[in-house]
Image (cartoon, rainbow, N blue to C red):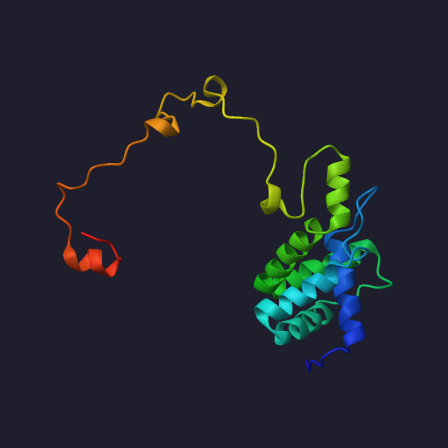
Length: 175
């Protein structure tokens, strides 16, 4: 079977249809293609795996029975299953990247927040609200280990240990 590289328009449609099968949306949840997951996915695919894998993905979808249009849902699912069977590593990467792109969308974050769950696009900026540490509530209950208040933590005296000079120099440690 000879393979030809599909046009950009065909490849874009194939990826959008795949994304909509992976992330169909329902109710307040938008579908993946509606919020543009396929574009983010394509950019990440090219950045991390190269342009050849973007073309490879489109070819693999066609070889699995695509395009998806005009097929009933059962047939579209069968095409995705054939794609996964033929290209398990590529499919797994694409699936995971699509999920990450979906949950990084401001539209999906808004749905999550509207359901009462605190979720931020950039949690590293402010973090998530946490209650203050309460020893009575937060101390381990399993009977193993213990915690020390920060003020009670003391450095361990290692002066009696003989250090391997070569290793300490390789690690940049002072003797």
